[in-house]
Length: 565
Ligand SMILES: O=C(O)C[C@H](O)C(=O)O
Image 1 (tube, rainbow, N blue to C red):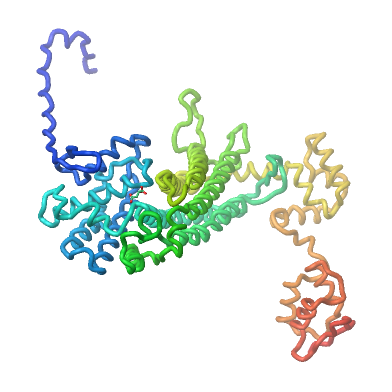
Image 2 (tube, rainbow, N blue to C red; image 1 turned 45 degrees about the horizontal axis):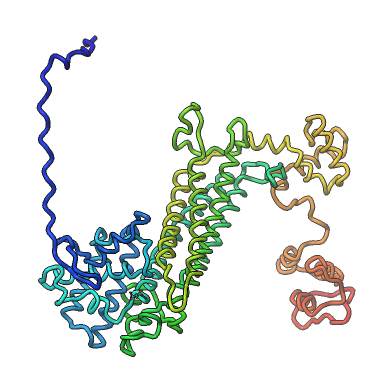
């Protein structure tokens, strides 16, 4: 056995020499810049400029900078690139400046360069002017380097005169935001598809797991666990179409509207040119808003889209609620399913595992719903020709898109794909349930079913056993009723003597029929739409579709028998 360390050992040894002090931080060098407010030093290496620096000081709110959403910065760079190309094509921007701006923008768009140079808080006053100026300054300073000049030598390439030429924050910022919505919507669609796929796989895996359906948290009638998963997947799948459709709202932009939508300071050809250039740069088929004054202040598209995200959040939260309920227990709860144990649940209760992933989904949904309320209030805040609260809308929209995307992947990978079913337990619950008596209703009537249910409740017995003991039905009939397919779908035992329209079609197309009673058709029509003879034009058409060509039933009365060849 090795000797135990001597507690007093350090007392008799010399202290080790202290480590050398850390090197002093390099001395920051500055360049001087000026704006409307005055002169100020800006770090010499910074690509951002004086207006960005002021905004950093002014808006210290969320701690979330613009760089938190690279897709927004990419979108801003695309807008600036498109504007430079349009200005150059229309003869307002020299090639050398255009080339420098385009290259700087491409570095942002393609390489995601200079993200750290966008440090301004996403929530800011000024309707996004600080964000727009941040982009103008970074692109100008990088452009200057490309032109062989020093940062800050704005006489060669100016943030306002050149990079912001023919533009205002009020068309640049919402246009970039619209592009960013489209860029963020695609990943969300992929994430929802991924979740839907996993739910479908589980629906197939659990298609034979019989379990209790529940309404108002009380035992209802049987279903399969596969049906439950399929219900969730189809519920989400319906939203995919809307996500694709509603994103198209953002394909209409207000570039060229400049300050208030009157297009001041633009060439008459500019709006069409910049819209075309931005479509090419972004790969999105964009069009100019028909009324730029309206488009400058209206946030309605963001509101609709946010409502759609709120709806998705509500759906995800419902699924998360169901998962928490179905996995509750394990010994004192429903315990239909087991969620994967992804981490220990309790610091004090050994063995406890909590449904942390669905809980996180629930909280994501609550946050999204809260953000949607903030977006609603901000959209309402538009006054006259502008909505000053656009930054709040953009911040919350981008947050919601990101959170929902991540929540779908988290729920899929860390929960859904690893769920297992407690088949024996769920089946036992079905056979011991009172609700199963519902399946006997059509065969023994509500009164006898109620009596059997009541007796089962009072004695703790099993309703099926009671029905058997009371001699209500033969053993064979009981077994037929208790067939899993009959319990979890429309009952084959309840198929009446009259064939359904589908069956009738099948009969008439696939077998040789020589004689058909016309009242048979009428009955079928009665069953389908509930109306009584005389024939309606629709039923007349329907009968004709079953008859050989040329044979025409009378509209006023139905012949008793129609001969078919
Ligand atoms: O920055 C601009 O171009 C305009 C600004 O948002 C404003 O309307 O005050």
